[in-house]
Image 1 (cartoon, rainbow, N blue to C red):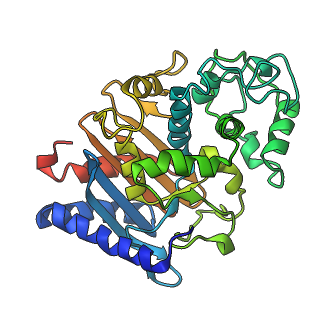
Image 2: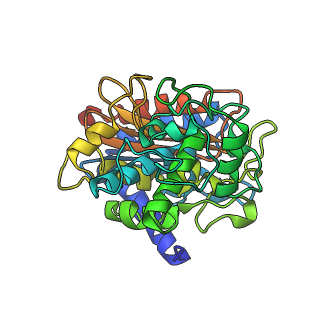
Length: 366
């Protein structure tokens, strides 16, 4: 069931109180200054931020507008498209299935040996693609460039698009040898989840991953402004970009989720590797999921990583900028904006902004 207006407003009020109760007023003022400077520099209409530690939200703040034309103020309960921050959610879902012995990283995806069997056209190289290759963006092609399948043939459904891509976009490299960031690969992983569970990707993730994290307000986004969900922001494209000209719903498992900043901070807190009682994956699964591949020292399986070790993922679509971070010091945070600069680095600036923001509270030692 979609969230009612009454429960939505209750969440909004609670979110505002959490920030005021947890962070001293002088720190709050400095944090607001960092956030508003970012918004001004990057022409951001609305910005939502949440910071958690130990499974508890320490701070959440919403500044600006959810709908600028109607002067609708943003609240912490508003939801945004999170773009590629969806990928860690898909990765966690697959590792949950691995813990249930329903698949392995070494399983093939296509062909008679594969999970998807003969559902799609067969080519020798495609039949060598394994689950681990899709998670690490090393399938050998289908990269996020001008040929990205996910932004083509927008009238096709998942099955039609996958068949078309296999037939028309041959893999350029043998699987496992070359890193190339691939939205399409995570689209395929969504179909793997559906094949194994017998229900839609959205339903399975909501019931078996998000609900155990205490997250109940996340859904797959619609495509048009008319399909705007209850509590969802309005998106503002930069330049010639059209936030409502994409098939976002088809992006489900690589870039389709709607979430609040609190939702993402809580999700990250339940896979942070810090508490076996809180985490929804075993420590060994979390370690495997966040260990970089040999093809790219900065990317693991659905998560960007470094040696600190911090884990994170960014997301960007016309009208959307998003980030979710788990720090080695035990913090989990997220930031969401309803715009992006097509020729700028809104995502990188957002990352720098939130690190600066959390460091305004010296006692946090983030």
